[in-house]
View 1 (cartoon, helix red, strand yellow):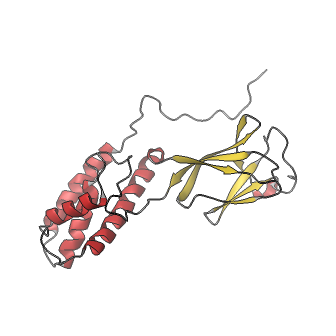
View 2 (cartoon, helix red, strand yellow; view 1 turned 120 degrees about the vertical axis):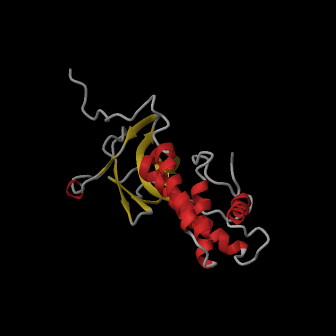
View 3 (tube, one colour; view 1 turned 180 degrees about the horizontal axis):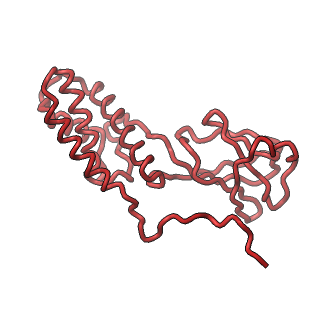
Length: 215
């Protein structure tokens, strides 16, 4: 079930008994929701980042080394060089190895990369053709419109983390007792920890084989 921003605001108001109160505006509650949403997103990323992984393609331009990464880019999962029907995994180059690199061959086996300033992709040696397929972990995208929905990787029930977090902040503003809410949130965090176990346990991650097969 995909919960919208409007759903989340209504549930937060219900939890703190502010359904008909304007003590906290919709805009204020939305800000609190997005802060808690980002925390929940980062908890999932920290526990098992592949919950959130997505991909994009960056076309290469001859003679150009730097490219802008997607605006929601957080960290890389895997980059592949695609050219002439061949897809080749890329590696991050070590700065001490950059000097000898000058041009990339047709197979693209030597094309490597570095991420600069968190939002710029630098590739070396200078490419001439092809594209880069990037698999990456995105940042949390804030909810803006009432129809915006929580990310699909968040399973039903996990949204309670956001509701507890917002309710505690609203209760603090109202100078109400938050002890019960804090206790319930702690109990829920323990449930969330179990919920976030790798949901793809039939195919666990393995160490990549990077050595060529022996003759």
